[in-house]
Structures are given as structure tokens and as C-alpha cells.
Length: 279
Image (tube, rainbow, N blue to C red; front, side, top):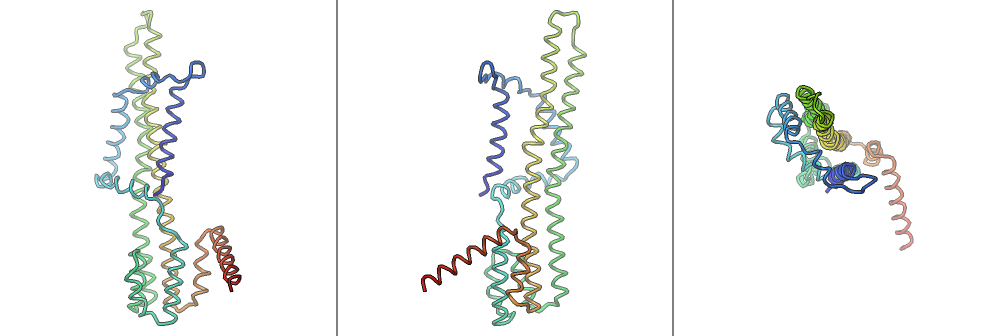
């Protein structure tokens, strides 16, 4: 489980609340929270943002929100090094026993994309056709996922806009109803200004603490998944071509962060030294 999104949201919300209630001269004043609660402003900002997004996207995107939240909480389940190790293992098996021997091992894979990719070369499909099929699948995946993070990106642009709309509405109403001849005209003006600005606060919070981080996190998770999918494509093509497993591993390591590669080399060296010591 990836707790960074949850921790980040809670921390951000806590810091904003701290900024609201903390007064350097008197300390914490919880009653100031009431100044930031305004139901008409909530209706304009949150309701308007959702309404505009419904206009821009099909309702099916909203139905997928729980699924997106689950993906974010689960975090990254795609680890390039594990994919490389699996591909190398298949390459060694194919080199010893032939491509047909991969069918039973492929059926045990939980990653459907990798399993289907291995089965393509087991079925002796033309290498050019295999590459074309797999690249079409990657393009389709890219297209589907891009619609998801673009949904949240567009969502986040509507929030500040409706916050500003709410502020304008508040200012217009304040100026229209302000009585300049009244002794408490300045007080009412200050109160009206405060209420008008709350909508901008709501819009900024919704965009910058919720929607934009969600869009970025989904985009990042997509990139990590695509790296693993590209490793599978490159590896499967190399296996079908009969390349040496060691050469395949070196080629696929280009997809892995340099630090991770160095850590793996160091771990392997330590393991080898330990084995020699035991001998």
C-alpha cells in the first residue's frame, strides 16, 4: 500500500487548518474556522466544478473514480527489475528447450500482458507481426490512461475558475447592498469581502490539494507501468530472435534506474563473496 498520497493530503490539510486557527498573539483560536465555512460558496465552487466537468466528460469517468482511488492507494505494483528477471528466466528456458517449452510457464504468469506476449512467440507468429500487435496494445493502453489523468487535470482547472466566479458574485452582492450612509458600512464591507474570498479559497484547495496531485500521481503510475510493458515487448522480441539471455538482460537494464542497477550489482557481489567464503 502506498501511504504517501494519504499522508500528503492529511499533512497538507493539517497545515492549512493550523494556518487558519493559529494566531501568534493569542495562540490557537478554533472559532476562526467558522470564517471559512460558507455553504453558498461551497455550492458555487464544488457544485459548479462538478457540473462543468460533467459537461466536459462522460458520466462513466465519474463512475471510475473509486477505481482510480484504489489504484493510487495501492501504489506502484510494477517493478522493472522483476520483469527483467522474469524475461531473462524465459530466455534461458527458451535457449535450453525451445520456444514451445514456455507455454506452461507463461500460463502461470499473473501479468496478462506478459502472458499474452509470451504466447504470441510460442504460437510462432511472425516477429514483425508480434511487435506490431504488442505496440498496438501499448498505444491503446497509453490512450486509455491518458484520458484518466486528463480528466483530473481538467477537473482541477475548473475549481479555481468557479472559486473566482463565487468571489465575483460575492463582491457584486456586497457592493449592491452596501449602505455607505450607515455607521457600520465599513464593518459590513469587511464581512462581505471575507465571505466573497472564501470561494477562491475553496477552489484553490480543491485544485492544489486534491485534483492536481491525483492527476500527477496517476500519470506517474502510468509511466512506471509503461516502462515494464516496454521491457516485456523488448524482451519477448529478443527471445523470439534467439538472443543470448545475458545480452537480453544487459539491454533491458537500460530501462532501470542506474542506482538500482548498481544496488543489484553490489548485492550480487556480496552474495558471491559470501558463497566463496562458505566454500
